[in-house]
Length: 221
Picture 1 (spheres, rainbow, N blue to C red):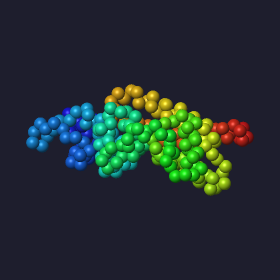
Picture 2: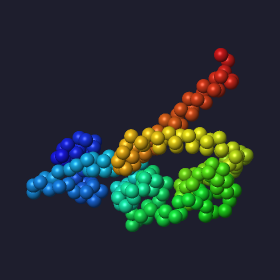
Picture 3: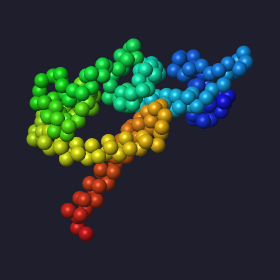
Picture 4: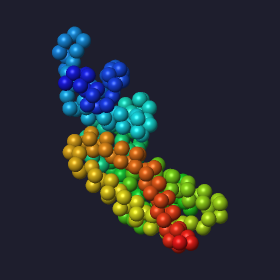
């Protein structure tokens, strides 16, 4: 396809496509004339992934380049690929993810000593979850527990188990929705969209459900 068709199919403007080509985010097309080239479905899929990383996840062009370099190396490993595009795994400047043999350690392993970090490790052990060492999500949980305790709220990992069970079910639903996208880049793009775009809606649904059950329990008809 010509670059105009590539733009229409991917939803990315022609000037932006040319910028990505110059900056190395998008591979060059097959030359057909001095200033013309043809592109294929691989370019469409890669552009859509770039669009989701920059426009939805909010990564910089430089960070997106690093993620894509790692993705290119890991297309045979869907687990690592998802970890890279969703930010569960850090990407070194070389474009390489952490060693795979670290991926079976429980969340919180090697974290700074503290009740909250220990709680996160206990929670993930209770759930049987295997994650990379010190993932950003585990740090968010630990910091939240620390804040709640500082405010005098008696909350530990056991209180989070019912929520973790709900999160486990939600994660299964997320991954089930990747099955229709057979290509790894399509799966990666859909994973970013489902994770980032759905999070505000999931929080809003919780608020709606709270209002409903509050009306049932405390409302006056």
